[in-house]
Each structure stands twice: as C-alpha cells, then as structure tokens.
Length: 219
Image 1 (cartoon, helix red, strand yellow):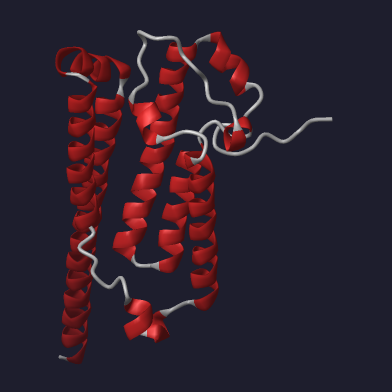
Image 2: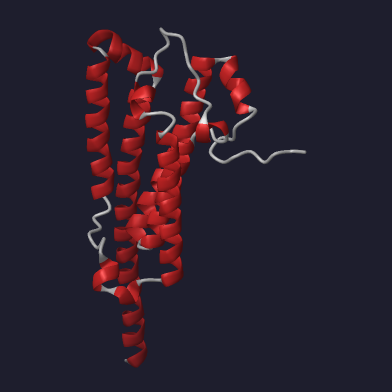
C-alpha cells in the first residue's frame, strides 16, 4: 500500500512538472515569435527595395510614418509578450536583488547609453531613414564610426545584456536573447545593404573599422 502511494505521488509530481515545463516552453515560444515579428517588420520595411518602393509611391514622410508606427506596434507586441510587470522589484522585494549582477547590469546600461549618445552626435536616425540610391552617397566615418561600423547595434546589445543582468527572470532573459539574435541578424542585413549602397567605398571602410567592436590594431 505504501509503495503504491509513493509511486502515485511520484507520477503526479512528474505530470505536474511536465505541465509546468510545457507552460514555460509555450510562454517562451510566444516571446520568441513576437520578437521575430518585430525583426521581420524592422528589416523588411527598412530594406532598400521596400523603402524605395514606398518612397517612390508616397514620399519620404509617408515612409517615415509607416516605419515608425509599425515599429512601435511590433515592438510593443514583443515587449508585452513577456507578461512581466515587476520592473520595480528591486524596490519592493530587494531580497531578490543579486548585487554583483545588478551593478554589472547598470554598468552595461550606462555603456550602451554612452555609445548611443556618441553615435547620435555623428549621425541621426533621419539621416539613415533618408538614405536613397538616387543621390550621391556620403559615408559617415567620423567620431565613433571611425572605430565601429555599427555602434547603435552595439549599444542595443549592451542594453539588452543589461536587461538580463538587472532582471534575471526567464521572460526577460528569453526576450533579451531573442532581441540580441535579431540585432546581430539586422546588423548583417544592414551591412549587405550598405555594401550595395556605397560599393567599394564601404568595403574599404570595412578594413578600417570593426563590425560592432573596434578592430585590434596590428603592429
């Protein structure tokens, strides 16, 4: 009798564990799919073919509105898919804070903000949005762009890593990793677009500046 009850308890525990794992997997998959939707929207609408088609038919202002609105909507979908609301947990449940990770997260976040600020001093979002193949290209190589080709992508990745360190909870981790993966993919797609746009000028620039990290000088 005792053995039978023990086996039944173990089976119930395993079934419960399996159900919990399924729920966690489905929630994580939802976050990944929502983040992928944002990536498809962002890279798709910013591709030269789609961008030029919209601008040629409806103008730059309409393209800017379409890109901005769809980006906000898809990002909100990805963000809300986490279903995470304890953003101030460090104030209300400070015992959950892992001090070393939290300090490191703040450092990563500040680094991301500093890099984004340095990049924004050289090139604006509108400059990127107005990039067309029907006018003389002007490759930006000043400031932080003299060392890194995609500093804004680096700033994004650092900020997402900071999010993981500041909020080491599964939904946030899945969201951040998904967005980091897309950010890297987006950077590679952007690289291909810039090669098409700038040609050999950009290829020469690639030899001097690193992708998202500075190149190590060789003596």
